[in-house]
Amino acid sequence: MQTDFKADPITAPAGLPGVDRLLQDVRLADLSGRVGRSCVVEAARTALEEARSRLLAGGSIDADGLADRVVAHVAAATAPSLRPVLNLTGTVVHTNLGRSALPEAAVEAMTEAARQPVDLEYDLAAGKRGDRDGHLEARIRSLTGAEAATAVNNNAAAVMLVLNTLANRRAVPVSRGELVEIGGSFRLPDVMRRAGARLVEVGATNRTHLKDYEEAMAARPALVLKAHTSNYSVIGFTKAVPERELSALCRRRGIPFCIDLGSGTLVDLERFGLPHEPTVQEALASGADLVTFSGDKLLGGPQAGVIAGRADLVARIKKNPMHRAFRLDKLRVAALDATLALYSQPERLAETVPTLHWLARPLQDIRDVAERVAAGLERAAPLGWQVAVVDCFSQVGSGALPAEALP
Image (tube, rainbow, N blue to C red; front, top):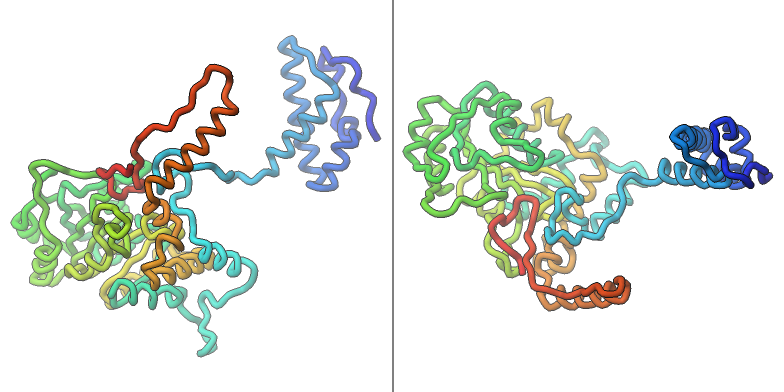
C-alpha cells in the first residue's frame, strides 16, 4: 500500500522513516518483486544514509522523494557496467572504447557458442580430448603461410610466451629504437624481464646496423627480436636492418628470428587507400621464424594474440605451462574463427569487417553524416549557438600507422 509519510518536508534525522516503513511504498514493493528484496533493502539504506547526511548539514528532504532515490540506486546497481557509446573521438580503433567492433559473423558465432556446450577441446571424430587451437590453426596457416600457429589472450601475452619459452634466462638483442611502450605504460623491456629474458640493447635510438647485431652475438643470445614500431615513428637520420638480413644472420648462428608486429594486418592496407603497413605474410616471407600480432586491432576481431611460424617452435610454446594461463575461452575462439573466415573473401572485407569498413569509408560519406548531425544539433542548440562542419583529420589508433592522418 502507499504510505502516508510524504506531505511535509523532513527537517531532522528523527523524521526519517525506517527501512521497513520505506519499503512499504508501492513502487518499492513492485521493485522488490523484480530485482529481489536484498537489492532494494541495500538501496533503501543508502538513500536513508544520504538523507541523514543532508539533514545534518542543515538541509531538508522531500519525504516522497525518498522512494525515488531508492529506485535510482537500484537502477544504478542493476545496470550493466559497460555502456554503449558513440565513438566521435577521431580515433577509429580506440583502445579505451574497446578497440574493434566485431563483424556480425563473429557476434553470431560468439552468441551460438555461449548458448550451449561446444567441441572446444574435444575431438568428436576420435572420441578423445582435442586441441582448441585446432579451430583456428588451419585458417591462420592458410592465410599467412605459417607452418603452425597458436592464439592467446593478447599480443603482449604472445610476446611474453615466446620469450619465456625460447629465451628464459638468456640474452635477446633488440634495437634501441624498438624498445616500445604500449598503452598503460607497459614497456617491452618490462615484458622481457617478466618473461625471464635478458635484454641486450643494440644500436642507437635512430640508427641500428647489422654489425650491432653481430656484436651482440657475443652474448650467446637465444633469439633475435624485432619489434615493429607500430605506435610511433622515428624519422630523419635513421637506419634499421632489413628483416631478411636479420633472418640470414640468425640462420648462420642457428637461433630463431622473431618479429613482434604489434597491431598486425593480414591484408595490404593500400587497397583501402591507406599507407602500407607490414603484413604477417610479409614478415614470415622475410624469414621470420615466429611472428606475433593482435586480433583486435587492424585484424578487426576479438582481443587475442596470435603466434605464427615454425611448427617446432610453436609446439614448444604450446607445452609451456604459461600457455594454459594465456589461452582463449570458447567465446573468443568462436569470434576469432569467424573473423578469420571472412578473410577468405578479401574483396568483401570493407563490407564484412567493421574496422576495415570505417578505415575505407569515403570522405564524402563522412561529410554527409557530419552535415546531418550538424543540422540536428543546430535545431537543438540554444539561441545564439552556431554549428558548422569543418575539415579535420582522424587516426587509425591502437598503435597502427601513428604518423598517418586520415582526412
